[in-house]
Image (cartoon, rainbow, N blue to C red; front, side):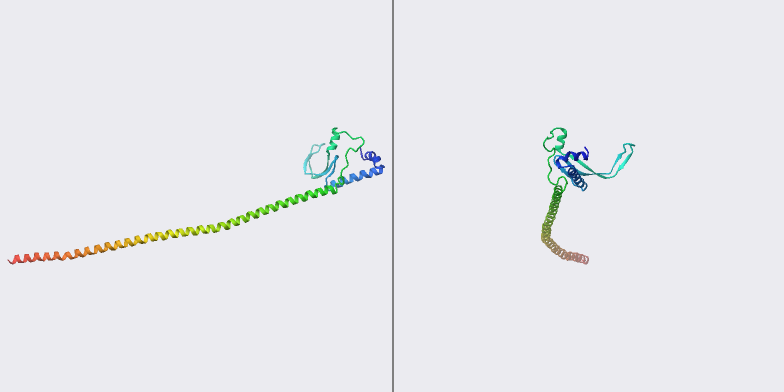
Length: 230
């Protein structure tokens, strides 16, 4: 079926061939414009039209078999709806006195307000979620930084107190050792003085004994002289 045959098929329902032709042109024009602008046109039960980007690739010429590089392009894609698929596969029968595909909601044929609003809402939701996630991350980092600062502040006085305590202990140890050493030094000094005093009288006594020897020597010499005279 071509376009002319399509117009003839719907002419009786639209009140004439001209009205049918205008309706077909209007529908196709709306679908093409929406897809070119990047919108997705979805008709419930029939299918959806959308724009798909294809990256650059290599292909082969079917006639010569030569490998040819194909540039990046965008192509339209049509995906049949579930109702359309069921009718084609035969799982559902075509209605005799009713439309095969039910009427779509307003704005779905042109991909206008309804589709655009849904896209905008989805983008707004994504943006809000991203903002919330960023805010949570910033708050978490700020809390971590404040916690580190507080721990550092608490640790600094503790370190100072520990240092002062160690210094006090060292000073106390030095004082106790000095006190213990002072009496010992005094005792040794007194002992030395006592030994010096004891040795001094002994030396004096020996010095006094020496004249006695001299006296005995004089007596012996006197005796010898008297004996000689006799």
